[in-house]
Image 1: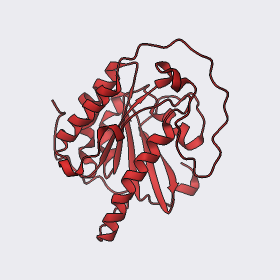
Image 2: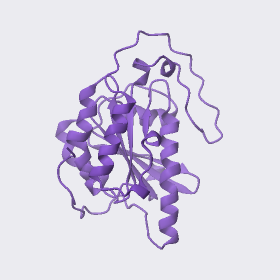
Image 3: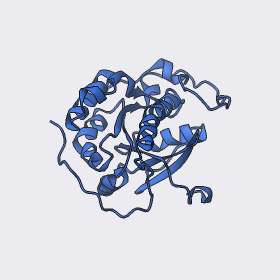
Amino acid sequence: MPESTQMKKPDVKIVILGDMNVGKTSLLHRYTERKFKDTISTVGGAFFLKQWGPYNISIWDTAGREQFHGLGSMYCRGASAVILTYDVTNWQSYAELEDRFLSLTDTANPDCMFAIVGNKADLTDRCAQVGGHGGRTEGKAPPTEPAPPTLPLQHKQVNREDAMALYARILRYKDVDDKDRVPADRMCFETSAKTGHNVDTLFESLFDMVLPSILKKRNNGVDSTVVLDAPATGKRTKAGCCA
């Protein structure tokens, strides 16, 4: 963890969940460092601090390996948003979100938002192979990278409609009122950490939706600051996954 971030307490906590090898760490590196690099599997978890206007946002990267699964609920404690990530070429990675990871989010905030993200879109979508659709870069020029060579497309096992169906099931599982539901088309993304396709759009759309709720809570006198070293006192309110 960079020394300059150790003393800061984030205003908003976002957690990335998903099976191993779906590209969670690569997505975070693409957004925070503006580049793609091969990574090794995350051990336990790690977080990055992002300055967004006057706010500090912590983005937690979690391990997808089975042996670290029990840590997931601890990392989700107090989360304002959860990014559930799968590989568009791997149906099992999509199924694992509901079967193995969704119940970990029971320790998140009651009004937690959920984004469903299909990564590795460059493997199935010609447009994603050349990047683009990045979003804002806070005054910085977008990184200039040579366009990757045209590669044969792989079979896409998970469509965006599947992601939207999962999102609807999550809302039912969380008993989200109709008036509080964000439309699925705003919360389901297909990204490529390799080319940058839709990566900025994912994170910054989520920031734009989460931060107004933080402002509302502060205006109502509710402290939404997350303390990183808070003791583990929370407990689950639900068990199991949705049917």
